[in-house]
Length: 455
Image: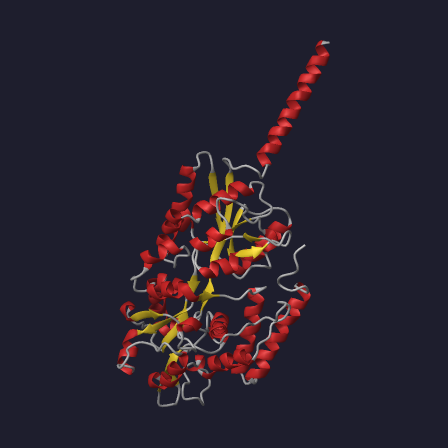
C-alpha cells in the first residue's frame, strides 16, 4: 500500500511538473521572460526604452542583438526562423510585407485594434503594417513602426544663394528644377564638369538610386503592379520618370549635372554624398539619417578630398514634385518596425514589449535618441521647427510606398537598368529589361501574386 501511494505521489509530481512546463511556454499569457530582440539600431539608441520596459515589468529582461548590414540581417533572419529559431522580436522593413507576413504573429487585441493603430500612427504605416490575415481574411496588425523616414532634398544654401538669388532654395517642382539646373553647371578648360545641379545618374555612385526612382514613380502616379499583384508594369509614366532621372547624366543635355569620371579621381565610396559635401553638386536626395551623421561625414570627406562645405550651408527641403497640386504630393517612405516572430515561445509577452516600445513616452525616447521622424501622430508637433528635420516631418502626411516583394532584387534590377542606360542602352530597352527581370522573380517566388486569396 505504501509503495502504491509513493507511486501515485511520484506520478502526481511528474504531471504537475509537465503542466508547469507547458504553462511556461504557453502563448496565452503575459509574464516575466527574457525577450530576444534583433535589429539594426545601436544598443545605446534602444537602451532607454529597454531599461524602461525592464523597470515596468519586474523579472523581465531584454537581450538585444545588433546587425550592421540589412541584407545580411534579412538572410540570417529568414534562415533562423525557417529552422524554428531566431528572436522573439525583430526589426521588419516596411517593404517586407506580404513576403514575410508568414513569419510574423499578428496582434489580436481588443485593447489595441487596427482602428486604434490608424488613429495612433501616420497613414503610410497603416498601409504597410495592417494586412489581411490569409487564415481568415481579417485585417490585423503585423508590426508597429519605430519611425517613418522619407526621401527629401538636401541642398547647398550658399550655392543656391549665389546661383538662384531670386529664390535661394530648390524649386518645389521637378520641371522648374530641371530648367534651372544649368545655372549651377561649371566646367574646366578641358570641358570636364566641375559642378552640377544634382546627383542623378549611375547607380554605382548614387546611394539611393533605386529609391529615387520609386519616389519619381510615385510622384508620376505610377501603380507598378497589375490588378492581381502578379506582375510589375513600368508604363509610360514610369518611362518618363526614368528618362527624367537619366537626363541629368547626359552630357548633351542642358541640365547635365553628373559625371563620376569628371568628379572623382578614384573610386569614391559614397559618390553622391561626397560630391554634395565637397560642393561638386548643389543638391542630392537623402533620408534623415544623412543629417544625423552630417558632422562625421563632413570630416571624412575633408580627410579624403582636402575640402568640404560648411555644415551651416546644408539645408533640407521636401522633395520636389511633378504636380503642383498638394493632393498629388508623394514622398517615398523607407522605415523599420517591430514584429513578433512566429517561432517565439512567448508571443504575447513579445507583443507586450512591442506595444510598450510603440507607446508615446517610449517612442519619444527613441526618436530623441535617433533623431528620426516620428511615426506617432501625437509626437509630430514636437519635431516641427527643427532645421534638418522639418522637411521630413512635413512629408509624413503624404508619405507613400510600394510593396516590394524582394527589395534587394528589385533595387538591383533598377540599378542595372540605370547603369545600362547611362552606358548607352536605350532608356526604354533598359527599363523593359528590369521589368522582365522582376517579373521572372515574381513568377518564380510569388506565382499566386503578392496577396494570394484568403482561405
